[in-house]
Image 1 (spheres, rainbow, N blue to C red):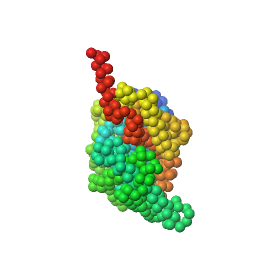
Image 2: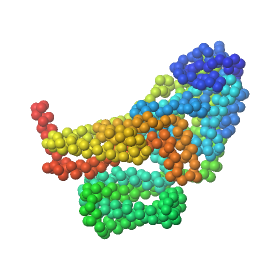
Image 3: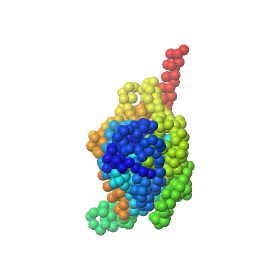
Image 4: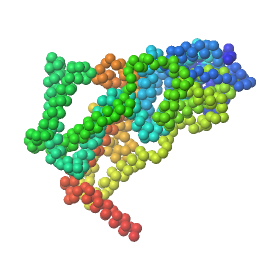
Length: 613
């Protein structure tokens, strides 16, 4: 390849939809259409009367050899343009510029948190490989940019915006694929026991209210719930006292919190002792009934039964969690291998076509839709940019990941096979049946129908208002309370709590979005936070508690936790309302809730029939 010696002195332009820069300059911010020709004012093409050329350099994103190959290729070829597999946002981040802050309004559009999480996990995996092989991920792309700048060669950013890619990736996943992806990511970085316990606790929290609501149908009477409830309360008190006693004993001083670090031997012993004491006392009280009548007489029967149903739910959840932990290990979802096996891996193999093809095919089997977004579409998008540059007579060296090389070269060989550019940009819509919207509509209809049927059954207005007020309060208290515990400001937590009741009218309006919106008025969140989180997670020498505490100081992670806590609080409140508040309300009526709803349905049918007959 040859290069116009004056190109370094001429500012580059948007050619064929790419974003180009002068040596050392920032990329243009408004790319033109994909099929637009290069404009005057850009680097002079070496082949003004004919077609240019494109050499594709496939690299491993964590390979030192790839960095050297890129530097040598650019220096030897001296092309008109060096095209790199970067978008503007990642280019700015790689150059050390401050990323754009997250706009509070973007949070209310729906998928912002999921896109940050997905980008975080992808970045985290690559960072771990980079740490293991002592090279910065994407160093070969930075080397291409810096070498081009040193030689006065223009740089073109030819990749699609990362946010668009992640959104299209998520939209193309089926519900099962989404579960598999989340499960693989979670179980791939988490001990199976931790994953099992976490899953079991979630099951227990959901199962507890169901036991309180339908337990009578399977023989779980109020007497059983009362015994279990008193036993659970006694176990909690005994466990806490045991924890404090063990902490003082192992700590040897008044600072009872110092040995409680779950990662230290003393912390494990303390927590283990407290758990044994709690389970033993809870089991003894439940089996023998000792003190049940006395405690039940002091507390509200509803509270005791609620604790009992939650206790049974959590107990069942622990069992489910144990089964899940075993299944994770049996199915090979747990982290396979150790650091030694990773050290034996040769990063140079990543540039071998056969190995990369095998990796891509494995991912394609896991998620065909995701593979299309992450691999095939990006191949076509990048190829569109390169074909446009080549058609204008530019000699180009394109630096891309090895997994994209074969696809891009096939498009360069047969440009007519390229899909239309319009189908590669913009937000993608999920295909198939919109189960989420159907479920949201069903929940909304059930909530509205519940109050309508009660009204048609003759329930007084003041009773309906009392029931709605209870619904509003329990949702507000739990959503705002968990948001505050997660670190939200009082005003943010209050806003989330105030709108939590609306999730039953429209579950797509998550209260966490509103809490997050308020938090973003005080937080500065951007993609740079992902790098901070990666650094914290990669430090395996620190205790989990200390790492988690530092993660809460990172604005992005704090935002995610606050949003999630608000939504979880609203879900828990909805379950508790159905399981415990509604039965208490039914006690003041002349019939059961079920009978009243049947009566309301009959009355509604009678009125409708009379209107149409």
